[in-house]
Image (cartoon, rainbow, N blue to C red):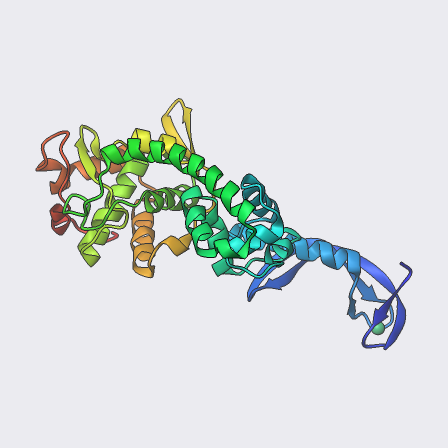
Length: 329
Ligand SMILES: [Zn+2]
């Protein structure tokens, strides 16, 4: 390509390529991209260059996706092919327009609402609900086959859930901070802390951060965030059966070094699972304990009435939150 069109000169002009970093706006957010752009040699206006402009936009989208927890084209394709659906069938089953998924798989940015639905559809139980809702929109043989596949997948998933449910039955009471247990929220809280502390997040410290976030939130708003029950362990409060839970979370990996087990987050934190108040509580806990070591935070938790007055190996009542102090000095 030897010449490009310049709007300001109103003709085809010679151009110069410059490489460096510059901002691109994606949905109102300014993203800094490293790339190449074309400029008019006569008036220095930036010119539209089909190849480089496309590359730059793709880079900006990729960064935006990571920042905002938006699925990549490849992730969307994997969810779809996991169900053996073509683009049109998948799109219709999600309740979208016929070509929406095709556009997303070619690189368009999903809207936040549709991104949320596609994410949810990765869960077979959720996909089954979508199928019931939109079954008339795809051929019957597709419905029949998908129903059969989903039933198998859901049965497998339910076995795992039941194992965990046995431990965590769902009644919201004072030991759950008046809300039902949400494995999703607990997972996202872990991602929040693991993504925001500046060093390895050890399980010992994580357990205390979760305890403080849930109990402080109860103190502030009368309910916990995740509905997790905490046991009074020898080393301080810990989420009930945390080992089984952490092992089964696909959004994190448990790593180990000489100092103990720590969390390696493998998914992005998604703030949309939380109310603004819940996010505020988590940010407060992060700020207060960010620089506290595992043993320091364990010792602090040992000074809480919640730990002192609960017999070892029993559940800690959220009533003790009222005796906690939240100040961040
Ligand atoms: Zn020009």
